[in-house]
Length: 89
Image 1 (cartoon, rainbow, N blue to C red):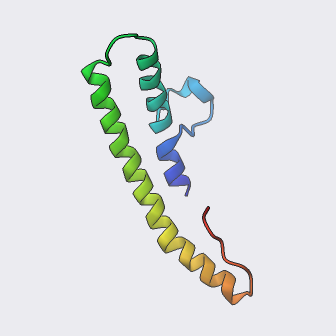
Image 2: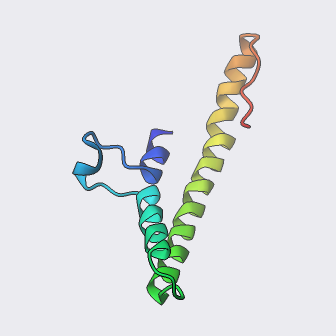
């Protein structure tokens, strides 16, 4: 789960000073660029959005795989102990 989190957000200590950028920070940069110009978005911004969408789909697939595999084993262990399963919302 931590590996997935590191794909989405900067996790190094020190906040913005580290220079670490992940999916969230890249999306914020594109969003800011789009808002700061009143004209049609530049082609490089459209291309960047498409790249970020692909990266997000990859993270979503990894998360789905994690839920399918790891959550199943955790729920099996919980069931053996008579506890309710974890259900993603």
